[in-house]
Image 1 (tube, rainbow, N blue to C red):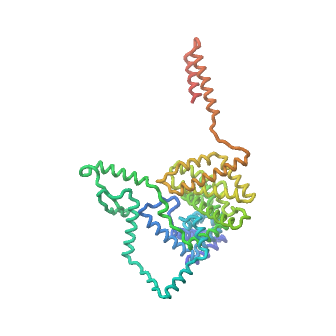
Image 2 (spheres, one colour; image 1 turned 90 degrees about the horizontal axis):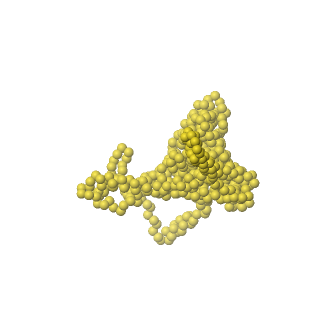
Length: 487
């Protein structure tokens, strides 16, 4: 509350543009950085924890959810909404956009928009819990003994439960049933503790060759284990779902568009080496944050619109709130990032970009099927621009082939399947609207021309060799010309 009270004057000076606006902007950015550090979560392209760290990771997410509830009660979310509304092209307010983007991701991280909508909808339904409590209370009053209050667990019991949970996780992650009469010990290093299971190597006394072969087999098997996203999934509670849903609705009414417009301009300027606005401070991670936040809000807006259209079938799909993220420059940026990540084998970053592309395709598909006349025209124009370039269709095949179970989670495969399905369906409708079928095939004319030219050059060489009195230099020149034509 003290920080919120101190921010009143800097925000007023920043809006007015007074003499101390530069110092006030620096102070506001420092406060946003403080909130970002308090709400810090792993970035969108971070690797998932293994079975040993899954339990600790879930507890971290639970603590993060409780922290968000405390910050929301202190009006921090309202501050984020207000500052997002102030973003313009002026240098006085544009310097906050990248920090606000990270704060926004920390609020919505590790949540699914569809799950949030369903959980918030379930919270509004009448609950049978009070009736059950009254029934149990009446039964206890009739003569049954009331339940004994649960005693709080001691610290020793908590430590025993944690040790038991870690052993169970270790057993699940293990690839063998037993250690083949070997030993198990815990190695304490500067980077933390690590459980090491030793086996008796084959051969008398366990020669070094057998130990090396066993180490190679264990390493290859551990590297090929599939990525399981379910073990780190934490269900969204009703209270947090209601909080996130209300925050998303407030952001979609204007602050989200203002934030994404300035961030998109800075990312586009930084791509071409410009220093306008806040482009000089753009990092490579900002592109990943932009894709992750845009994908989440596009999915949230689509879920809210589906819920609204299900209740009233007479309406049309409204894309105004996420129109900034669906424009053609965002498509071009996503295609460029996907191509670069495929070439650089950055599979985790590729998963974030594919999720962004999938959300874009689904939103534009809703525009083409449930939108009004103007929305359908814009959707067809977007698909025409995207499908006209063969890069998009080539990228679909490359993304589908890039899936590796031991490098990517199941969510990547699900996003890829939905992306390909919706793209092919819209491509089919696009071809029908054009009045025919559009085929893309290889160019064979150049090969025919080259083959014809090579045959003619070979005939000239044969004629010169068979001609009486032919000069060897002329034959050599004709042979070199034939070789160049064939190449």
